[in-house]
Length: 236
Image 1: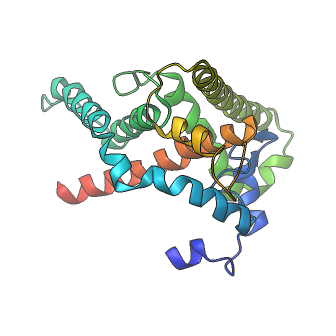
Image 2: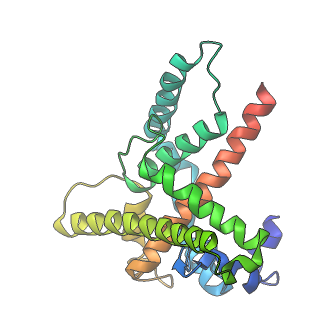
Image 3: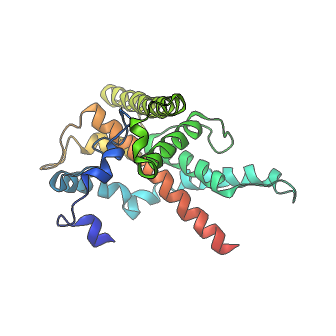
């Protein structure tokens, strides 16, 4: 799998990746790390992000990881009465969202204990939209009222996620310009290193940074939720 994903001779299919870039007319992952199809550009982006996933860097985030894990346990204790049905996939989904928000972007949203939080409402709509592109390729041409309504909702969800990312990134850029103390998270790392990487990607424009915000949240949440759910299923 690593060979296929990291070698240029195994090119990405434009038709398969087009939905990741733009969904029913709304920009989603854009030219983010997952959907970038130019291998040379992808290699430079990947080289920029690699240190952010290094063991030494992640160890520095252990307090945040442990804090979110403890929060999930405390959230589940009142529900473990032997009668309440708990969908652990949903719990893991909210856990990974909160971890990514804190470790990646310094967000302090209460997601674990709040299934009605904006991210919990928005991302499932976008993921549903992505799946619909592959399951029903003709849906994008449909003019049936219910289909038009569905596509409007997917576009609105994608646009709102990007707006959240844009606000988060602009606030951090302003803080860095003022010299304020900022969290040592992945967003700070990207903003600092993207302007200092010789031969790398200098000066991401704002929308490309939002692409990476969307990518980290969407792909990271999806993969981590599946992994945790699978591990939990095997343990029990």
